[in-house]
Image (cartoon, rainbow, N blue to C red; front, side, top):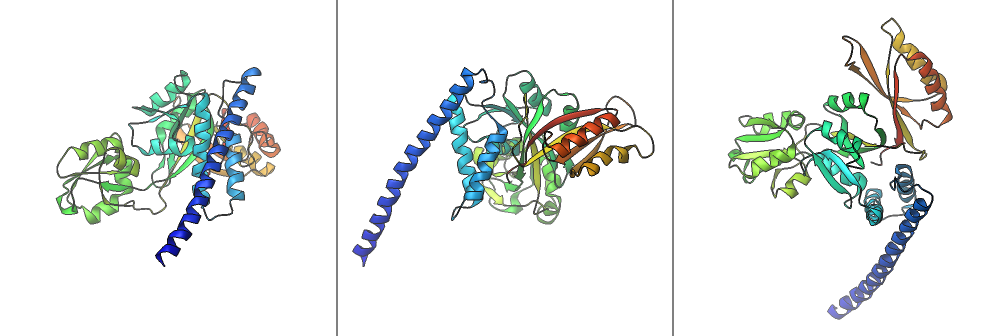
Length: 363
């Protein structure tokens, strides 16, 4: 029986080894083709932007549609994202600015979208994230724009009003919050560090499980993990990336109050994204301060058959008691219905800024 088992395993393992060799050759062949794409762009004077969001989105969508299993669509998307990231880095690693320090959910969003070959450029504030790309120190920025539990990220919305950068992508990240600590039982935890939003997202769990523990808001979940790692009786609420980076065990997992807690990030760059076939368009508009003004601005969308997926009001920074509206639409600005609606909106809106058209996030 033992010999038969080993013989069968040997045959299958030899087949796996043969396939690994073929995969290695195919991966390097793909990398060589990617290098050729860069050389062709350079000859035609288009070497400035080696990353094309729409092309990457189309590749990933095709892979998911053609995936026969048993690997999940999530697994094959991750694998091919990393392959494309490695191929891009042969020309030059993309520098990605994000709200740091290392170990935050923003870092997780960066690696989910750009892969692990990207050059991480953590910043101390969202303002600095914008500035790094505006000053051409970084290639792209990834910034949070809204959370399913806590709502819009106000500072990101304010900066979108004035930045010359374009939204060229989005990342949707499922947020799992963990209680990290060197303590081995909950009863020894007397202090919990975390970002204010994370403390709010775990409010009910903390009330039930650690009602007497002091809750200390800090600048980021990664900083919380650093503090908890160095202090007896302390814990941090943070994600898996912080647990791994700061070597903190998970004392309790998935403690977020809302089971579908999700944060949406946008990718900002100095160029637009072309149509991918599954796109979204974001814009900012203002309305006259009169009855029915907003409904007049929304009418062009319904008239053109364009679906509006988000409408968020925000106080205008220059005038008291006036508001601007952040809008997300289904479709690319080059699609005929969207183009028609935007042309009519431009005639009606006192202020209109197109933030960008970009591929819908692959969940």
